[in-house]
Image: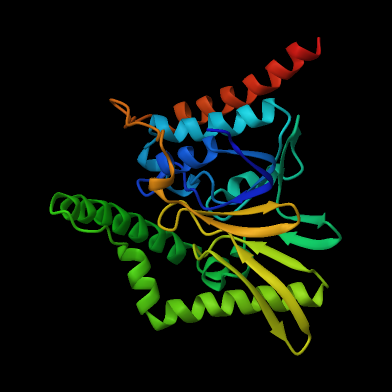
Length: 288
């Protein structure tokens, strides 16, 4: 099957290194597309959770897919988020077609486009980081519980459910938080005369136009690869929101024996370092 061409691909909130990461679904998707440019909009690697030493082979394959794109000359921008905030000290780092930054401002067909993760507008993240981290661990437990529930439902031929999505959609404070996040983002984008603003962070995929008494802006959110399995695609001057459907894939990534790998934090970081250094070495070798 020929790969689908995309001018710009934006994904966020993959949370590699956590139980909730849907790495095999993401691999199916990444193997089916051919982007000219990729923006990784934060929380790709979940450094908050590395103490659990959980790093399946399928998670490493995501890194390998990205580094393969880099070695092929595909521009890859890694925008830092709150779960991978340790990388913020490396903002401005470049290696071949790979770059780390805290935000991007692009001109897409004359449309001024602002891309950033979004945690800067999260009040609990800014002022109560310990509370946010506690919530992250609770969310991760809920994802594990959800997986167990869906395993039981599958045994009885029932449809899968998303406990986290149901909770977020039913709790008024959660709905208000999402609405406030979108409104604040739009207001600042309008004040800076951006045509488009792209975020992640809140795990709520969306494309819509927001209008205030100051003007209007197109607000987009790439969602996540834990519960929504979504991405933003820009091609031939138009944005679209992609949502994963396993039925669309004939050749899905197969389960591997012993996919679950428990490693020390040093081993995980060494693998990541070697993968990226291998890309750089390959480029230098080809240049010589």
